[in-house]
Length: 158
Image (spheres, rainbow, N blue to C red):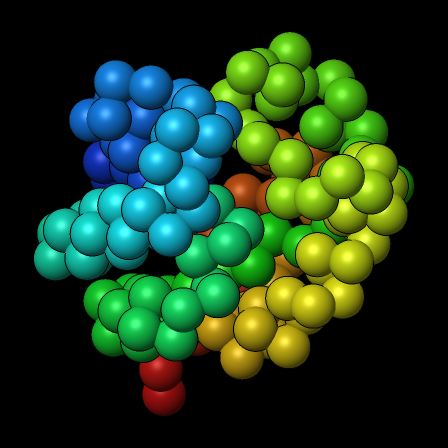
């Protein structure tokens, strides 16, 4: 929606990765392991980051490697679309593609996995972001409006 509203091209790194690999992230991880998935993710991020004026969606684990964070910060503004554990759980449950598209990060159950993942990544997200938008109660339109309001301060600093 943000790309559409701003007349920019949109890239979802996970979608590009899946298209190029010819298999889901779950299949990549099950057949080739997390290390190869993260390497593929990093390569796509590097390529997409070379493009000018695009909106890019990354997977939540992209912040695990500092090189990815530096790549994002060098190429544009990093916005963290923040949500609480319950909101993420609800979104995962409502997303019909989750089971086939995304592998579980652990065998601890959805809620516990989300809590632990958010807790471990919180400092990484905080360090990586230029700003965040709380998305729990927002619509896509309201979230885009907040981004439109905040973005000029980062694109055209005083």
